Image (cartoon, rainbow, N blue to C red; front, side, top):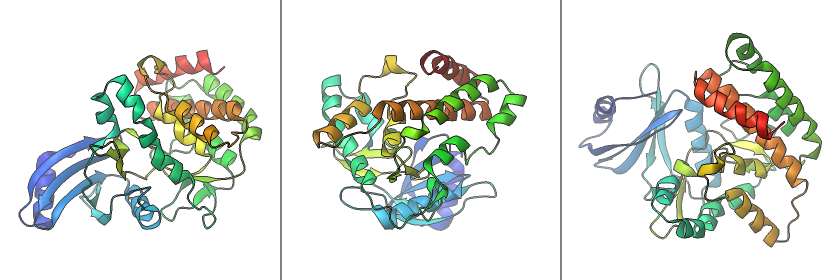
Length: 308
């Protein structure tokens, strides 16, 4: 998606007086973000075709916001145009984790990993006793599946509803490879924990703001929130198929911290293997649906080499 700067300016000028300092902040797979000033203060406007993501942000702010898990206050959501929706939130100072790390040498970057991971530990300790279900949540925080394995097996993607079986018949997606990986993943379900945690689903990178002291100021974008195994949240923080470009292992740091608290990580290797497979399957699916053939084949080669 791409909203032109001029479109955002016109929309905001109809809602606020004296709109200034309009700036394009970011553009991801599912949303675009702009910051601006007006007579009421400094704000962020995000635009997306998926309004439920914004409703999940509202739920997260209302229920999780704290000094340990800071979340941007959502002011309003609504229709941007016939195709897209908007979300207005209070501007939070800070630099995204990915941009900050890019400016630092390896030693300094490694030293701030504990600060980056600290909010995630607190997210995983949030109370889930009033939340039902597993897997991808609705805007009330409830999962849509009866169990964590059932969610993983479903290969659900709320942004692209086409099944992997259909893609296997109509595209370059290799159904034999997909099926082999899927079967191996299911063999590992017996090792998964029965306790569920709140997962952010897309933690770090451009979804975490840090101040000049390298302390978190906001955990952004809760649209991928899940109920499941906390270990799953660590997988995407280091893309497993791009190990040559990885200088920091968030997973290793997380594991060291958990073990330092004398907490046993039961069936770590089997859980990790299961989630690496699921993560690969998710990306094989979505890169096919998004017509990104080069990315698909890169991950498919890695998966066949490393996971089978």
